[in-house]
Length: 87
Image (cartoon, rainbow, N blue to C red; front, top):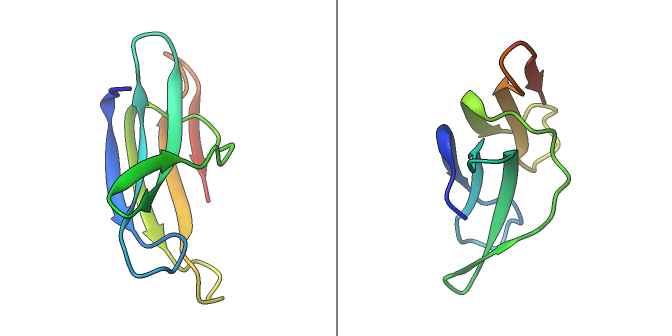
C-alpha cells in the first residue's frame, strides 16, 4: 500500500539490530499509521493499532520514557478539521 501526504522514519522498534519503518499518510481512502517490522529484508505490518495521523503528518522514533526501547511520535491531521499529536 502506498501512502501520500505523510512521512516515514527508520528505527529498530524490536531491538533486533535491523531497521524497521514507521509510516503514516493517506492511501486515497483512509488515513493510516503503520509500523513495518523488518524480517530479513521483508517488511511486515505488525498491526500496532496506532492512532491515524495522515494529512500533512510527521513521525519520529525516540525513547520518550527512558526505558531503553523506542517510542513513537505521530502528528498530523485526521481529516480537514481534526488534528492529532500522540506519543
